[in-house]
Image 1 (tube, helix red, strand yellow):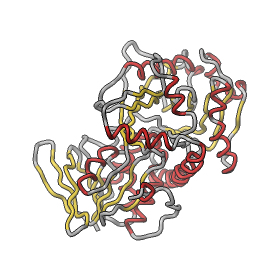
Image 2 (spheres, rainbow, N blue to C red):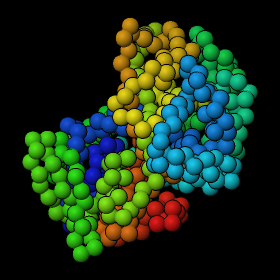
Image 3 (cartoon, rainbow, N blue to C red):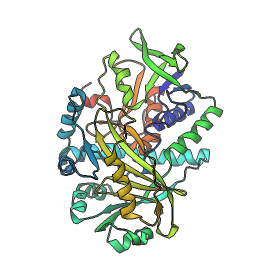
Image 4 (tube, helix red, strand yellow):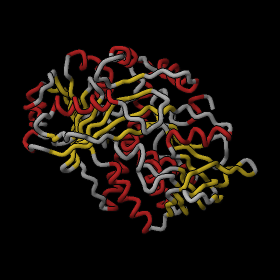
Length: 424
């Protein structure tokens, strides 16, 4: 049985891994020249199931308004005369309350904790190195920042997830480089079981392994449409960079192309509630080791992650709601990333005269959890909407879809994780 996967980001590559383990003939198609070239290329790399949280959270609308017009901001809203944008925002606002948050956060965490188990199994089986580190420290600049995290901390406590709320001196015991910080530090939330690693490096090395196992990757090939015959997904129409067009047949099609999946699903009568919330990152070199980060952190005030990958430090964050082209870089989010680096590790990271930045489109659902499973079109399946937690959820989502396509029962409950929650 042949399965075509649309998209070779971390979601598509891990899906190929799990499907090939089930014995499927797998083809992965992507318009870029290799795996993890878009949203997966510059993400924070955090694998923190305990921290995975919907962007639709209590206090988020107020935070968005607070930062309007500020020179450094974690949230940038550029309103447009766009039906898609405003529809998504209205749905998002409806979920920014405590009741919805307490429903949606555990749904996302269910996938993320399962994914971490699957990642550890894959790492042991393949021996893949991806600059992993252990532990995750959330930094609170003020008492108000800590107060906003109270609902998340309560859920951690109820779920029995290992965590510690720490005073500043204990934060320094975990991350000694913070001694030279220029930012105020009120407290920190430490999750010892969470981790981080280079998502793109993992995808590259897994792709090499999968090729050796017989999985076919078709890069530089744009997917123009999903082919449906007799009411069933039967393949895809692709266009090579040379202009050559071809139709590839399949027994099942898995949509894992992020926000590009919206345009592919629409002609089939499937309305996917995704919006491309842009995220930014910059990757810097370690300067003075004694004052550099050891593992992964999150600046809660600016929703910006700081992650150590070998001799590199990734600063990633900002949520920009706009209909601009994905490649459009804006000064404010770039300045925010550099501010975070200077605030916390002014002597630990080297900022060049002309730093380079990455920008990508994070496919977000308005309520937070991803969309997994079947569609109204037989043979067409979804693995979408992971937002900024695609790396953290990838192996779990992949196994769920492999089980569903194979006709097996998934190992986790899919309540609230399918397209059905939107009334489809």
